[in-house]
Length: 69
Image (tube, rainbow, N blue to C red; front, side, top):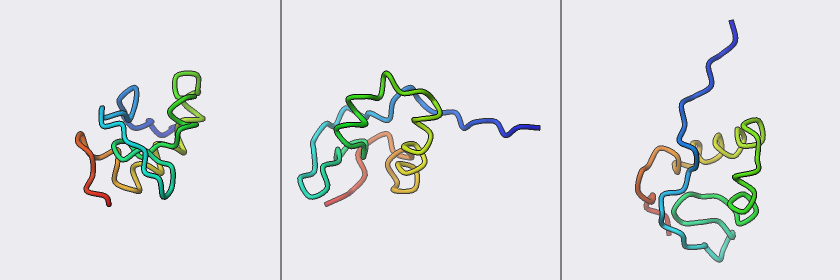
């Protein structure tokens, strides 16, 4: 029996759009500019590793921005 994919929102965006200069990721959602720009054209297969990274880094579990400096 195949594994059921996790239930995720359409986008990891949390409406806190500020780019961190040190690593060029969004403080709110954790995505790179390229990931943000391409998100709506990406397939679920292409989004899966991004979601996994965001979940590992603690972004996708939050509805508000994580406490990152």
